[in-house]
Amino acid sequence: MKIRIRIPLKINLFLPVSIIIIIVVTAVTLLFINRSINAFNEEITKNLQLEIETISKIFEREVSFNLEKVQTNLRVAHMHFYDLPLEVTNQTYEMEVEDQVSGDKHIACLREWQLDGKPLSENKDFVNNLTNIIIGGTIAIFQEIDSGFVRISTNEQDSDSTSVSCTFIPNNSPMSEAIRGGEIYYGLALVMDKWHTTACEPINLNDTLVGMLYVGNKENDMGELKRILSDFKIGKSGYPFVFDNDGNMLIHPYLEGGSWCDSSFFKQMQGSKEGFFEYKKDRNLTTVAYKYFVKLELYIAALIVPKIENREFVHNAIIGAATIGVLSILLLMALIYRFTTERLYRYFSEWQIAKKKLATAELALKHSEKLANMGQISAGIVHELNNPLGIITMYSNILINELNEDDPMRKDLELIAEQALRCKNIVGGLLNFARKNKLNINEVDIVDFIKRSLQNTVIPANVKVNINGNISNPMIMMDDEQMLHAITNLEKNAVEAMPDGGTLNITIDGDNDNIQIRIADTGTGIAKENIEKLFTPFFTTKEAGKGTGLGLSLVYGIIKIHKGKIAVSSNDNPKEGPTGTEFIITLPRIN
Ligand code: ADP
Ligand code: MG
Image 1 (cartoon, rainbow, N blue to C red):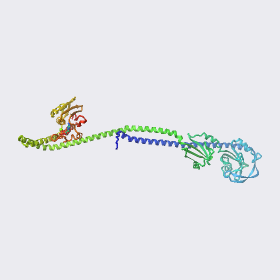
Image 2 (image 1 turned 180 degrees about the vertical axis):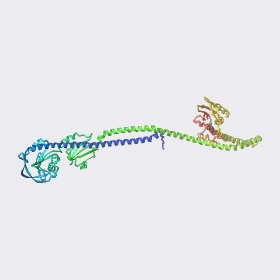
Image 3 (image 1 turned 180 degrees about the horizontal axis):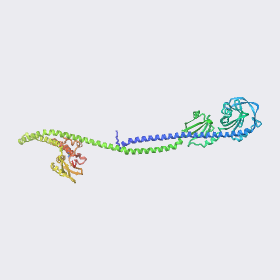
Image 4 (image 1 turned 135 degrees about the vertical axis):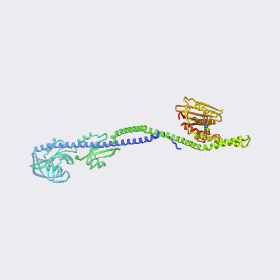
């Protein structure tokens, strides 16, 4: 079985709008939260790149600081070197030398140098003295050969702690080119596989280039940078790290000394100058930004876990957006309820009332149409029927009078006279219709009028009549002749409904504008299915000869042309209470 639930009109109007508002505001809120989190994450990545930029600057500063250091060291070395007499002897010796860039070896012919009267190859005094002065730096003297510059004295130690002296810097290196051009050279140079900040100058003897004086500082010595970077914190979860071209971790909080050359991220990064990527670490997405630091040939990188960083922000964004969302929903709903739903509701209610009124009006119109038709038809036929009926009645009565009391035709003639009279009654009723459109208004005392109407009605002995006429101003304007027809018809009907006797109660009430007359009987009552048909012309429940069915339609017509109303309430079922009928007439005082 289908159950139909009646939803009140207000909810019906308000519900769809509310659902739309809730959906729209929720969608906007979620979009806002999503956008905010994305913006925050973007900001995190940007910050990470900024951090790397900062670290690059620190590295840069460290490099230039080292450069300054070697410049000073070169000046010190220069002063000490030229304090001692240098002699390049004609004594030569052969030695296998190795190109320190390509590793190529060949035999070179070198000349014996004497510094302070001692052969340089045996005299370590100069470099050793200087080592004590220029702390932490390296110092070397190079001899010019055809293919470049060979180290002939140095404090640099090879891994087997012997002095490095058989490698040479080839002619195509920027350092050799500068020296051959007679210039002092500053910059980074690869010495024994390590990057050094270097400074060197040519050694000339009798205007001939014979060698160069070199000082350097190892750059890949990460001690100082490590110290700085260990204090470097990025947010709650981030840290910087440094690795070289081969993937060796140079600075890292816990992977230092290791290598990540096999990692796919490292391979992905190799060859690229800067960028960032994301990867999953302990189920958290981690962002890594990196930059290649050209001068030292290493990568500076930093990582951060956005989820840890934005946890608080996301929490606040969700609570904030949700609060604003709920408040906006409530506000919008209140506004819409106040300005739209209420109005729509009023509009629809008025519309429904108007619809009902229209239906009632249509019914009334049908009624009036019926009556109007009746009026037209009546006017036409009444004239035609009245005369012949008069003649039939008159002659049948004459014939009855002329016949003997026991004449067998007497009964037939009496029937003719009776039926002719019935026809005359019907015609008389129709005549009333024809006439009722014209009103003849008088001022009437309604209580007197009701009393007068009762004198016109035959009241049997078993019917009791009560008039309740307690009204301060009984005066009303109406066509009393027509109204008398109406009221007496109602009284007649009431009496006819009480064949076994009863009470006829007539109550008169009134206010400033209207007067109300209630005509109530304790009769049989009217069946529910007949209530609607009461005012229809020719509707009657009475046997032929007794009722014409024109009484109530005449009453209706007369009340209407007085701009009044007539209503009826009735009970014909003794089980539901005392039976009886009440007609309620409301008439305006002024017509
Ligand atoms: P008629 O009286 O000629 O039948 P009416 O138009 O006066 O015609 O009344 C129509 C019908 O309405 C009556 O036949 C009767 O059935 C019913 N009726 C009218 N007034 C009453 C009443 N007071 N009590 C019961 N029935 C009534
Ligand atoms: Mg009647």
